[in-house]
Length: 139
Image (cartoon, rainbow, N blue to C red; front, side, top):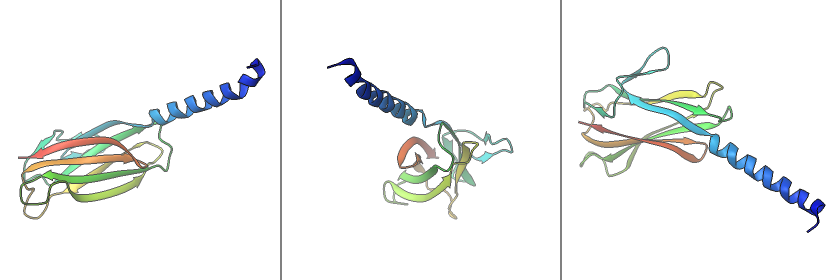
């Protein structure tokens, strides 16, 4: 192969490498569960075990290198809560457009009869890709 014939191949390889690096950089850098959010966008009552009486469960998250307007979707599941719901039952789903600040929060409110004890999870998606899974327990 002549050296000038290699230029298009080198250019294509560099472009693919740059695109792959950009896709890898789009991540959730912070995701924390708790019972509230303060005025500085920090979680209150952080943990991964909560009582049946908790009013809401919040997740504060921060994204890095994600273009403004990217949909960020939070899906809450009851993984295993005995007979209260079937396994992996979807409780709630919310989609937000990523703002220029790259952070936000999702929350799930307590059912009227209290939280059924058991295992739960929140899945956070950036666009169509699963970016983070957070698990928690209601005791």
